[in-house]
Image 1 (tube, rainbow, N blue to C red):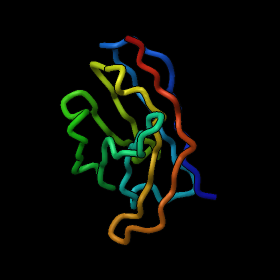
Image 2: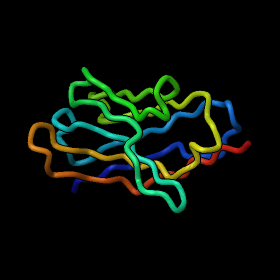
Image 3: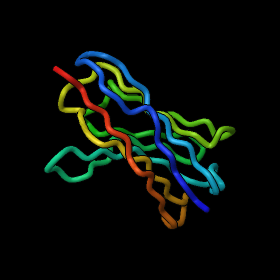
Image 4: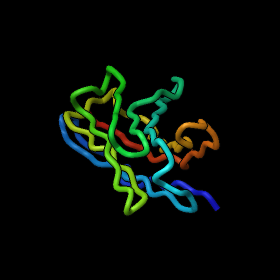
Length: 119
């Protein structure tokens, strides 16, 4: 059964660093593009960072560019989100998303992990 499991959420002070992980199960991981989304209270879910199936290309939301880094380890079927210079506005539930490369489907979501940045 396909499953994405995020981990690493927590409380961090403004200006600090934190890392999230997302492990994939039941997927041919190397054939999936992977994304991190986030959703803050009363806001729509937004794409934060994306990485292609090979890891050869990444993209970021303007709000996190230069502060966040997405990476993947296909041998471990895991992606990471390294978050530096965190701001209170980064507070959100962070979701891992997998999209079958080339075809765009199927798509899978993790359950989300809360990151809270205190000022």
